[in-house]
Image (cartoon, rainbow, N blue to C red):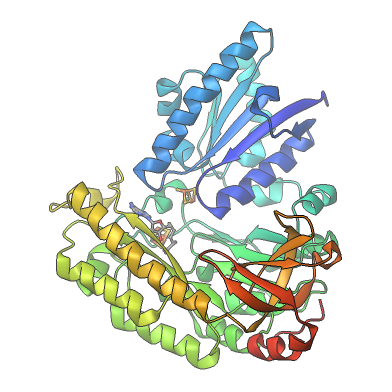
Length: 465
Ligand code: SAH
Ligand code: SF4
Ligand code: F3S
């Protein structure tokens, strides 16, 4: 059954989809599929889709138009191309996708990826296969672990899903409907996955989940472990130099996680903590479960235990009923926190979510105007954050060759790309860099062994990895 076939897979949306795409490729590898970067060569195309905003969904249907044309061209030359739609649009729209795009052969929701081989068989037999159930078995138990060679090509940094789904039901959001209720993977499953990654050369692991700090997976002691405890355990594994986690909900930052930022040198002092709005009225209407003052207090608590910590966030402008005063409260929150970076989005009414039914939807032009002002405020904060690194030493984990020969690129603890002229031997290692130039999206510097001590103090990190 292992006929050589080619798979082209494209991910939209969040890191969870990127992770799932790798795992789908791993599952299909055992069916004889190898990945190709050229869609024209593929026997199977998987679009791993995102449903979070209108635009994300529109992208999928325009991409499907392109894939259909390729399928028709392949058919003319006697080749069969199978098209699968996976991810959150698949979950939300199911059969409707095939009605809109009859060239689609398979629709598979995020909880059913381990069933892909069977779905391929079914599609071959019946012409179509749809699976958008939330099966009782754990997909992670039924997906093969990442093969060593495959992870090696995935580089120095890797993502590991530790938690899926969401029970928060913020009134604007589709995630609880597309990903189902909250679920945490058991501790030992995660540990063995991280060990494998470390063996294959991965040095930095980002634990991911729609609501990652709601993590409460079964520990080997029979108790539910909070995320802080999981991080402490992982930071002991040989080879792992850096840990991160994303995305966190402000209401789930428990004491164990705050303590982890104090106690774990390998836990990077950079936290994505989406605020969404700075106005209490809007936060209540969003059902976010915190007020502006709670959010600011949390930032203070984290800064108290880890003075080097920096923050990023997500914001929505133009939530139904948002007034100019509400919006100004968001602007002032941005300045009060002094974010190192942030994503901002125009509110997009999603069918089936409570906020889509609210009166007082904000006109599109006003949303655009607020988005523009918010982005200017965020850019100002981000530039201020980057500028402070001029002349200072930072510890960089080098990931790959740079654009120019002789150059290598890595990341600072704050995910800033850092470009340095240095030997490729440093890839996969931490080294201290003195920053000589700061541009809008990158830092440039020179290797500075003398600055090692300084950088270590700065980030309380060991350069041992
Ligand atoms: N679980 C995370 C967010 C995951 S979705 C949290 O609670 O913070 C990623 C981001 O998309 C959200 O933070 C939000 O800013 C944005 N988003 C979600 N639904 C949206 C909608 N309907 N319109 C605009 N932006 C939205
Ligand atoms: Fe969506 Fe995040 Fe709210 Fe969950 S916590 S409903 S994922 S915005
Ligand atoms: Fe999009 Fe689904 Fe992620 S809606 S943001 S792909 S959880």
